Length: 212
Image (cartoon, rainbow, N blue to C red; front, side, top):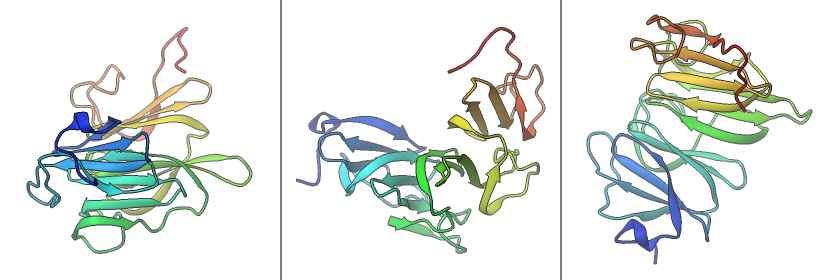
C-alpha cells in the first residue's frame, strides 16, 4: 500500500520538515513519504503520509519545496521553484523532477534552508567540495554578496565534514573541527558577538574547543 493514515503506520523516522510539509524515509524499503498541508505554492496535500519516491537515500525540506537524493546519487526537487533549482523557470512543481547543473561526482549529502540549498560532493581524487544555490538576501550562500544565485557556486572552505542550513544562514564544520558561519545574524544567531549579517563564511573562535 502506497499510503498510510498515520505516521505510526510507517517503519520510518521523520528526517526533515519544512514550512508546511514533512518527509520521511521508510527504513525497510528506502521509499520517501510526504505529508503536506497544500498551502500556497506547495501543491501536494495529504492527511497522512503518502509514498512519493523510491530508492531514496536522503531528504531535506525547505520553506515551500522538498529535495531528495536517491541511491544512485541523483537529486530530485518538488515544490516552489522561485529560485530556479531545476532550471531557469520560476514555476511550481507537484512531482519530483531531477535537478540539473550539479557536478557529475559522488553526491555525499544535501541540505535545505528556507529558500537556499547546499550539497557536498566527492571528486574522483577524493576531494570534498561544497556548493550552494538559491536565495541570498542575507548572504546565506556564502558567496561574498547578497545576490541570489540561479546556478551553483563552489564554497572555498574545504574540506567540510558537516553543513547545516538554517532559515537564512548556514554553518559549516571542517574536518579539523572548526566552525564557519554565514548569513542572517540580526539576533546574534551566528555566535559572533555581533548582530551584523555576514556574506562570507566567518570562523567562530572557541578557545580550547573543537567540534566533531
